[in-house]
Image 1 (cartoon, rainbow, N blue to C red):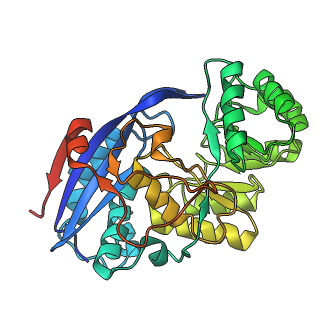
Image 2 (image 1 turned 90 degrees about the horizontal axis):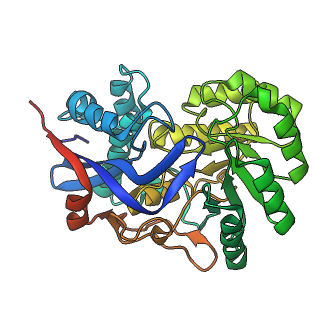
Length: 368
């Protein structure tokens, strides 16, 4: 397969309500989309690192530059028989997994289009329902949060994820657990704490959470392993799980009992599948994460989450949860059982009018 042409778009999608975490607020979700062609075949990919390097070290502007000016010219016009071949060509560039993922996912999407094979089948998944959980960022008040949780509980979501940050942690959790003693909760700290906060985590131990997601800095596996030895609540890694090797090392030192997998964060779908397999062989469950992508990016996550070791309900949302108008069509919608089904035909694609409205900048990469 060969990339004949790459059309690259940096888009900003307005949110209904700001997404607040320990690292700040996002009022729009900034993604990079790639339209890749091979002859008459066309496919889209999406990678969503956010506007600024707050989640990790990449930003949408940086990813757009790298894909359109550095990495795209390196791969356009060349034959790649497998995603591994493409990844080897990109391996000269250090890090920058979201930028690599924009191209690597495009390879998979084109391969699906060319062969007529559903993406989840190419990845080794099964045609099965993918269970979704409910997620809430930092809210305006605890009362507002409790009301939103009540709605999710009434709707029957199997688990609820809560963003936590200094000043929005123990008091909030005690109120939540007091109101919902039997609900499955976990918290996501987005690296907002350190080992100095051990007394806080010992108090959180008393609240019977499923796990604590990314409590410490993204680049510190050793401290996560130390924290895991000192508290009873399991630890899940997100930002720290940036590669297959990082996950292998984390499991070797018992730094995590769960791993969150996001295709963009790990450099694409081949790496995501490899991490799934490493965790499966180690007896460590994984679950799918999201970056509030459009229906396109969310559908790609659903396809990946059909692999068998994705056993914890994922960060997957209907389009209406965050967007008045999703960039991509058709919208992603939950079934009555709070699940998503993988696609038997093509995945959602950007709506041309909305793409024009939301685009910040665009570029085309062709062979010289």
